[in-house]
Length: 369
Image (cartoon, rainbow, N blue to C red):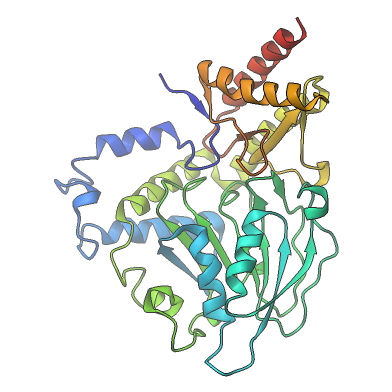
């Protein structure tokens, strides 16, 4: 029996994608072999990676002056690759400056890595209210190497409701947990990067979308595996790429097209989020943590309204366990923030959210008895 999986990542994938992958496990596209067995440089694999890139370009409306790279290391490696490639300098030169907006742990990690290669300015932070909101009126400093935001904050359940104006300073963003959830104007960014394990495919593949003029800026001492120009020149095949992950991404993108594209998915995603937030706002026992203007439609964090710390802890410990027994899994909050979290990515159907609400209504009733 399939459960409703609310994991923040690796996360739920479309059932038909999993079934197609299973059907092709031992014979992909009539080749008599699995994608996991193919040489990445073979004529059998090239159409797979080419089609995945073409589909992503089509769905996201990626301009021609941007390159698409399929890499490894997750978004966490991009915390190093981005500053290395567009902010680091040759030994002995003055360090470049960058601006990062702190909206949660992933922004903090991006800043920590960037500080190894450049001077980091944290221009604004929402830490003062436990990262429950997105700062307003943030600005880039002219001359900065780049301006970084985490568009959707998986752990705390917030999302940027606007894109900051950065002028000539490249806007860089981690979009791991919101890619393909709604339309995004790629031309507003210098670099977009995303770990695949939330809305794109299995863990192990990272997609980087980078504007052409930002390629080739890495210092000579940058390790080859961390240079965008080398990966671009080699067509994401400088080393063996995550072949099976790229194949699954291609299948997911086919599914996205069948749903009507990102625009259609955005409508469904907003419906799911509105349903759940509406329930939480009216609940006597649960409440969302993110402020209304900054709420994510992908990751919804919530806590018990119980005032007594011990009782609150008991409810938040009991809830995920009973939910799992009812076929609603991975609802515990991140270990750093506690509480509970429902990640409702593209592949989570409206029925899954409705089932969660129904369970929570029963759970509340039992609490009051």
